[in-house]
Length: 254
Ligand SMILES: NC(=O)c1ccc[n+]([C@@H]2O[C@H](COP(=O)([O-])OP(=O)(O)OC[C@H]3O[C@@H](n4cnc5c(N)ncnc54)[C@H](O)[C@@H]3O)[C@@H](O)[C@H]2O)c1
Image: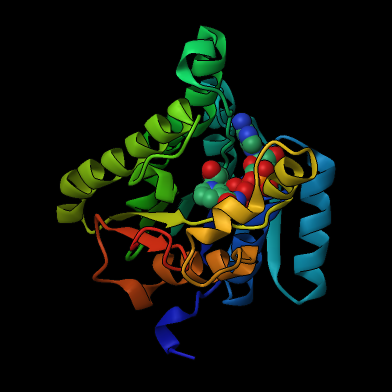
């Protein structure tokens, strides 16, 4: 393994770390030697991930927070600041989806999803940049989606929010690249997280239709996204800045 992929106990904050892509990402950065601060709303899920990381000789801390809420993000920042004084990387992964054509989309649902998928990234970046700038070669990784780049039926608010994440990422890379802070987004294609499995189990989406568009003909496992995410916040990716990295099995090429 590349030496630059290793962390030396530095702090990496991962939001939405209780399940799915966030959990896989947290486990990957912990395996590479980071101290991971696991963030999600449900403490019991965080405790489970922490135990699994520690069982594999990794280091983890938990902080329950709803990252769509400004006050919660402020408390999370204060927790990291008082415990560690700085952060090497922040991975803004928490997110959700809501499937509805725009003509049936209630304003509160629009606002709810924008709050989770986009406001959270704004709060996290704003509050954590001062802590990141205290570290050597810091970075932010925002988890967007292929649907930031292509349209998908009945996902107006998700596509808008993830497009906003990619655009905000690029803008922050312009402002903070000169200060040594890298800011990137990762755009997963269809990934079999518990949430996505739930859509298929409930008949809300058709896996066959989705897979026809993915050239590898299958869903990603969560760790196939988490591994790339861990690489992108490591020093091995030290010249990747302002990029939107597609990890989609070839979904967007055809
Ligand atoms: N699974 C996919 O196919 C796919 C594809 C592209 C992008 N993504 C993105 O990847 C990210 C993770 O998705 P996933 O499929 O693993 O979902 P998931 O629902 O399995 O995991 C999301 C995690 O975020 C947490 N979370 C949600 N809202 C939160 C909030 N307000 N505050 C704190 N934590 C919150 C959830 O509790 C959960 O632990 C999301 O941003 C999603 O949009 C997923």
